[in-house]
Image 1 (cartoon, one colour):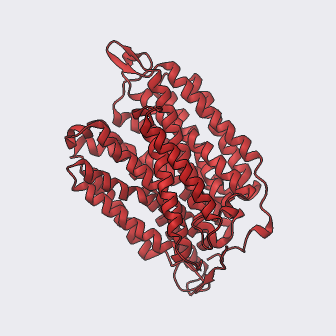
Image 2: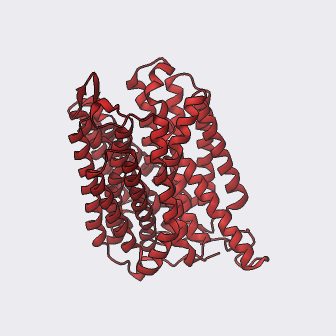
Image 3: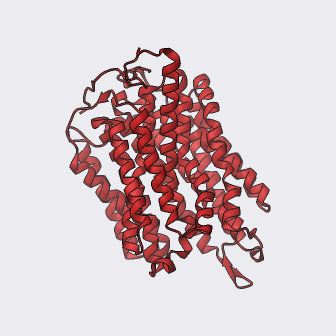
Length: 494
């Protein structure tokens, strides 16, 4: 059952009401400060996803354990992010988006500190799970924007915060590589802890309390059901390549997760205050946007699997460029800058032609980038250029999806709806990681004693990324315009 939201004082960036002293200039500066804080927090949350990549191969030796055990440090972050994102969105709608976001930032800082002190794999896995929970900060930040920005600035603001999901990883990778190369590996996590603390302080100082509350009870059964279902599916998808897709563990977790999610869906339709309002989620604009999000998430991550390997594989393989991890990360980093640069462009396109057109354009640019990559991938500058075009497409597409969601759901459900949409993107990237990993593993060849994926394997993975981008275009083309009666009104601009 949809609840009627309650309001407290009107929200303004300076905390003093929509018409507080200081005039439009003060409110504008306040809005800019809020946007900067939300974007910085998003960058920090996405940075956590790539922080271990530079030392992933060294972790078994560093922690005196097996590579199978250290792989859980990656899986734990993925699963925690996927589970926490929709839950955090719903709790934000109920108890205040700012309050929940600050709680996640504290968990992120705690996880980073724990990882900085860790010397065993179990402690690191727990720490990485805590860090992964911070992924919910991004959809919460997008939902906050609906409360604090005037309509003319909302599109660009959403684009900037949404893009941080990719920007943080793109810019964080070279930073992580440099730190890992010159300092003890624990320093990576002290940097991460500092970022989380700074984001928490920024929230405390600049981001005002939410004005909207959705009354109701916490859906504990819904949280437990969603958690169990997602854990089963995502662990199976992320570890299936190592265990084997026919392995009893993979099949049991996958089948069990799907069954639990099916039961969870039936229960969610019956409870009074569901974790996810599935009746809203199956509306045409919401459902098709989420399906397009899965496709775009796949398209994004397929390139993230292929391009770094092309750069770092030895030249003797006949396909690799033999770059160091740090140099390769610097080649890939400009895509993050491209995503960020697209935020004002995305805002203008969305205002003039709508979020649906913006999503289609973003997916078309992604498809174009993959088409270029299939032909031009033999030089570092070609991969840099392709990755920049990919960044443009992702920046446009990721800006469109939250805008489409917020146009189609009641204003008091923006947190939960954006959380579910972020989950769909994560699901797409998880599927891409599993599929691309399987394709590249099956295509592995040995040349002069060096084993790595073949060129055919890389080309097939790029083709799958192209196909996902095309699917995104097709699905986006069928997204209907939301009806006026599908919204409970808009938030008051600051």
